[in-house]
Length: 261
Length: 341
Image (cartoon, rainbow over all chains, first blue to last red; front, side):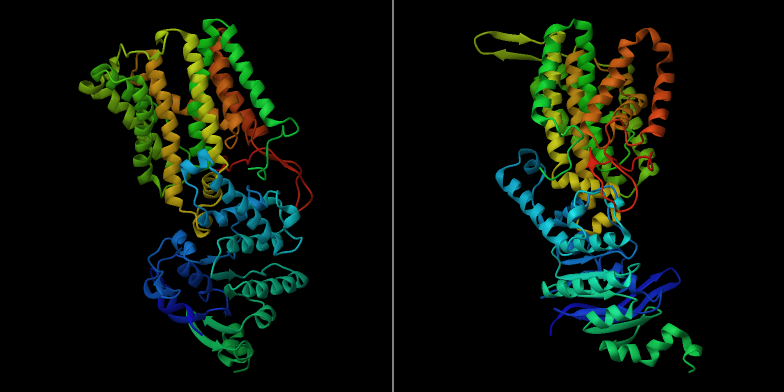
């Protein structure tokens, strides 16, 4: 399998605080790679680096074939090259409608400029109609959770629906790699189960997934491989079962005392 | 775009409503006396200014307190080139708008990283710099004395001869009505395009907008530039009509007035801006006897509005409250302006 994303010796320091140290990992084309680790282990920092919100202090992030360096690009450039993300702390646009939120994701795949917007030649109208249809399609990924609420303002949505909308909006950018940051946080077991199916369905749409998740059941049911992190370092990597049983990982989560080690 | 939520009057066909309004405005121009027409011209001018600024404040959520500077640039461009070089008004009007747009981008660039209060302070500073420059660069602008005898616009009508605009208020009324209608059309198209959506996304959450592929820097500069272009257009019109410009027309108070026009109508709503212009310009003129209490009344009105209807008179209101229940949205998006102002 070829590496779609290759993170090499990545380090991020904020003053004296080291959030990531010498982190390397590869995401293979077509897989779901789970990233686990206790709070503060650097998972979200890794996402912020890949998506250009943080500048890496050291190291490189190569994406695609042939590999292109991502660490110096602006966030919107990275999206255009095919990496999209969701936010752990929901960042949907509260005063826009559900549909408009998804349309923002489609923005970077449309071409109409100022003149096009004012004169609206037929190609611009076509582009808008296509975008509208695609946005509705993406809402349909979540069955009837979002579709009937397409014209609602997002601030009236439930927490779980906002999480779903985060995913739909990210998918709208037509990513090759999707970064999901705790997509099931705050959901009940039924909703989690439903989203597990959606994550697998996303992979079936030829989107590679990098998944941060605390719920091990979700990780076990979706991830092909798992990387475990602690204190900004990779402490384990492998098949989900193996990583979950790895004493180093168990220690990281529960502490040495709790395991009696 | 059919799927975008339309305003509360959706039961009445929109085109019929707009046609009726335009017919009313044309009839107004044909019937009323010069005094009322003069007020109409003022309302038209401020409508153009308000619509331009509504791009910056209402759409992109950037609180610009120095907006009147671009109005000054358009006005002085027309004043200087027509008096010194005899350049035609019809060339100066669009080029003045273009120059203002350029200034909008140039002044916008250093503020890209600023938000909310900080942006307001810096733009206020820019506005004052332009005004003070006009006031003190005597060799170019004649300082506080201003520039007089700016030629009024004229058009050659085939077969009829030359139509001098001169001081005929009615001609200016229909001229500004045309300009304002064009402005409404253009701003409306922009607001409903993918560019308008990018602006709204930035207003809602700049970081998330960037992370969803919106080129935030480009979109902000577009907002500054396009917004300024309309001010430049209004400025050119103002110079050609008044025949006189001086720095005192471009004070901070004028900037605040335009901000009020945008905010009172509902910062995201174009109809609200037009209504705001009518309220803020026409009412004080018509209530001249009560002029002493004008500012007081404005203050009371603004505070009342902020308390009772923070989204502005015609801002989008979403009917119903609560979590994830059936509800019907109507009108334009209410921007998060309260948190910025």
